[in-house]
Length: 111
Length: 116
Image 1 (cartoon, rainbow over the protein chains, first blue to last red):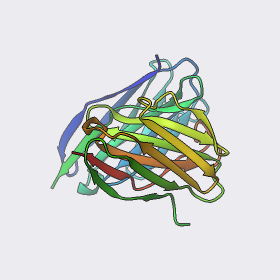
Image 2: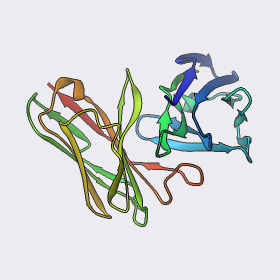
Image 3: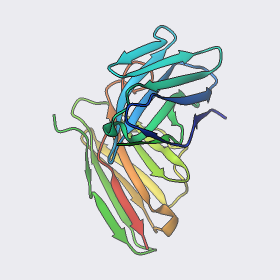
Image 4: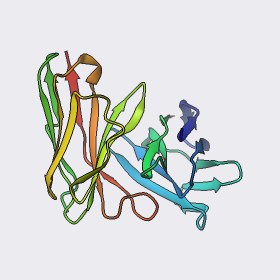
């Protein structure tokens, strides 16, 4: 069965710290891996990683795909309180390539 | 662009009652997705439609759940009868091309359902 596992489940850091969030996956036919940020409402899209685009960066956030290890990391440098959110990882899987989400990592950035 | 619209935003009902959640996708998006999010199970896909046709409903928990998409701009998720374990946030999302490898899904604000 296709699945996505994220770690840690939760994380508390102080402003200015650097954090690394992990996502590992098991899917029959890998196509892409997506990262979402969810604050109080709906998830919002951050990055999509594919075999042809294994590294993405946007400001203080960056993500790398390791196809050999079937995993991805999301790095956030110089964290701010506004980075506090649930970070979700998702991979298309199953017979119809529906998005399979991990349970997320709850990040709390303290002032 | 108004984004994905869901209603109601909050719903509190009693066990056994029928609940209907509504969604209006972004205009021009051919795919519509219904998700459920709980602390225990995270974000789960319930069903998705392509051009108003259900493609994958394997995530629908049981016969008490049903979803329809009568036209390109409207979908409903119905729970009948509702149970306390159905309490969750239900998200609707839409995308142009399926959101799998070349596109992203845009989520609505969600409906927080509480079944007493």
